Image 1 (cartoon, one colour):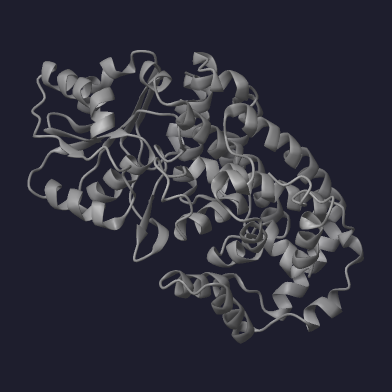
Image 2 (cartoon, helix red, strand yellow):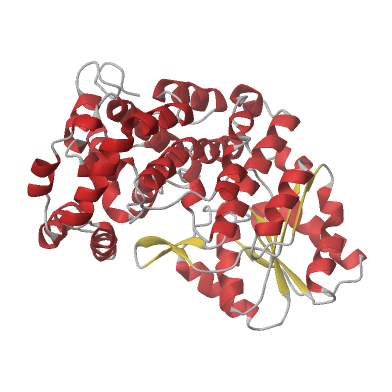
Length: 452
């Protein structure tokens, strides 16, 4: 484990006090629990699959160290557990029946359910990772679907994270691939933060930026070896994912690790893409395809010369709030999602004066900004090949998405989050439709001849 970087990140973290990553790390779980929670009783929360993989071992370690435990809470193993608020309520109500501290033994969904349920029950928790599948282990907030709308619900990060590399190595290949897709998304997420910083929408915190970006190329640089289960590469992956979570925790926002590529994924998740599959299509797989799509859009944007914008014309044609709401409601009719999308879109919609100021900044700063974006980004074709080598899907057909739905996602995903991304830059310069047309034209990145 890169202890120096992890320890540096922990100094800025608001909730997490300890991270243990290494071969045989499960042997430390009782000591970690004691340092965080003293002699409080413990309860293992898992599903039938993760309980068999690590839950029983965790209970034995706790009991051997003299910790009191209560009957474990074990979700069914099939069908695959879903991060739906009803499951939070079931677990919360169980936790309220005792005062034990939960240990979440599982990966993304299980961790999110425990995180929120523990918060509602008024106590902390400890995360035991069973797969390097996502960056949420050490992140604040839980991604939960409630009343049809997937949202990040407020709740603290775990007090500690334990990741045993021997356990992670035994995770299904698809879960390592999913984590790779999630981590790869930090490439385009970083570009979006560069945009927001340059246009004075959301400033970059250099310390937080470095946690995610400094070692990112190394962490994603050996996808074929990750697919083969190389222990060193797996360790770099889980470290990158944990550091991303700690960065979000320290920043109290997902901005350091989430941009337009995640908006693609979130929209598809809200609308149930891949939920009929078993196992359901993972978050990281959707983020991976979204990352390719956003990198391809960036290539069209970087081909423009924004220092010659016709700013008066753009401002004159800019829609007002009523027009924005009508446009959002035309695109989003799913109950719950429609109202949320209206609220998110209006929250970030600039008035004419703000838009004019932002476009002037863009024109002035474009040469330098373009250079920074080119250094940050990787070509869409390169991302596609890296994802393919890691065992991830790389195109719409592989995630059960029609090409027309992928095309529509560029406009529709912009509406569901107030975060400023390249989608907003393209819309505010009047180029979003034009750029998307280019991507789907014959010979374009998503054109009929090359579409995945």
